Image (cartoon, rainbow, N blue to C red):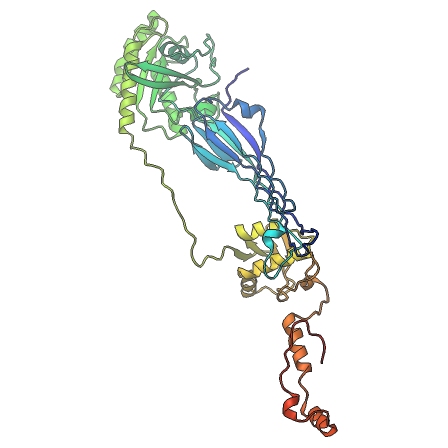
Length: 498
């Protein structure tokens, strides 16, 4: 069984945020302790980091389900919940992160490169953090936000300087075993190499890496054989080396035909046209192989290739090949543009950005989209009327109700935010403090007056009409009409007419 895995599907679940706490301080001799519910902790996230010591995705193959820990809920006495622990997953250099649909999320190259693939949910605020001058003792708290849940595909593209390509049994594994310390499987049958092999080669003061890719056949770029699975491993190579079998026993094959077939597959795969090529005529230790190599060498050189005749058994010609590879790799490194330093890109929001959009779908539902409003809905406890009223106030404050009215929405029209759909009712006025967990504006057939309306009604009751004043003057109840209508100081708590 092979121990090399270069493609896995991960099922990721970031941690959920902890719920906020609803608590009121109750302590002897301190009747006005106030709200003291703590905030919930944030959920743990999942981060990928490049580790040079990792060379395969084997660990994820056996453990594809990854879940970070949740945040802890808040508690009374202003105690905040603990944050969930982040998970850091080590991946090999050259790992590509894709969605299930094939969209590239990140290309991780270079030791220490990190990418947060799943973000933990925010913790909900407790009622101590939600208290203000209008809601002195909130009877609700925010719920913790769910963490990201998604499936991602990890694909490993080996990072090597030289890639060996060729037909099965051309001698690629034998070649890499003698020029480096790699020990690939070698046998006398096709497709002996089922996984890429990497080797480190030393040539004087130059060091470079070589990748042995499993054998390619015509049609490999469309899925035949093993080529489609491993062609991606040569995408990052600086130099391509065609290993041609000069002693193949198949009559219909010859080195020139093999080269044309492999080049056709590389062209079909795409993206490798600019890589320098070298040609290796292998197995010249066999008499027929040496003769065939001498025959085809002029044709290969006429095409512009540098040709080397080698034998992995007798090691003839290997020294010249290794130093030529080192020279080509060094030149390719010099020709590459210098990497630009990483810059922090800041994209400030527009000053007039509302933070949400409203569109009406085909079914007539007004769909409100936006990171902020969708997070507010996820963190609202819809079993608590006061929490629902608080959400309505927040939406009104950022202009959602005004925008709905401009879009033509009327009371009772369906509105959807995230996965919540409800009938829109315009805000019924300012918040009136009541029993904790309730909101008088959400009560059916509620005709309770606001504080300003109650004050105006009490003032009106203290102003007599002209007929009443004349009648009272005739009875001697008042001495003058002017004194009867003199303003009287009225307070919020004054419910009498005296």
